[in-house]
Image (cartoon, rainbow, N blue to C red):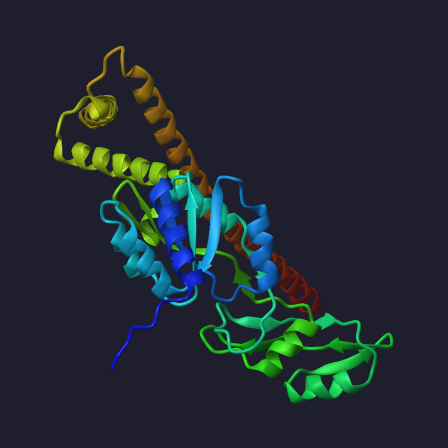
Length: 321
């Protein structure tokens, strides 16, 4: 003889309540609560607006609630349910909900076993610990210390845990004592349902500012392509006129065609060429100066030599009368 056990009444009530909330809410979102401590979760709940509700749910009970909900494509939320999750029902659009929860995230201490989101570095720093057992703990962890003004000081920066590696419990304790909080915790939206459409995290994380930047970048690239291809559209006509004017002025300068519209360009060209010529001539004169000085010095030496010869001749003449 076989019999089917009836589910607990609290489970039945919870499934019915969840189904009703999802049916009556414009937006339903699945959020990850992994890493959140109870105190942080309660703080987030207290700060939620009155038209927003957060429930921590078991995946199996959520799936049953979705089965009972008569909304188009609502069962697509099942594919987002993984790990420790909560259900948020609200009137806020998915993008604003994402922005709201991102703003509530805060730094938190590691408890051990978490994956380091970035390289965890312990800097050279002074601590508030007096000399004692903490010196041994630091030494076991490979941290160089010294005593400075009656307190333990870390004398050399150290890469404590590499990005992507698990944080051991003993290292997590040291980090907490040093008040180094390597984790960022909060509600992570995995996706949201609205008006029959399932929005992934990647879709709802796109901000208005990012959209505007992408549009501006695309417009600039399209204009550049149109100019290079000479594809005439109103947006590039002013740029083409400027480009044509520059090309015409360059051609006039090269061919020597002068009229009242470009005479100033020829004057500027003449000034530039005259300045270059003057500079070149100045360099030539500087080169000639050393040669002239050398010639003058040679003449002086010749005159000195002739003077010495005259003195010798006069001396010989006096000897032989």
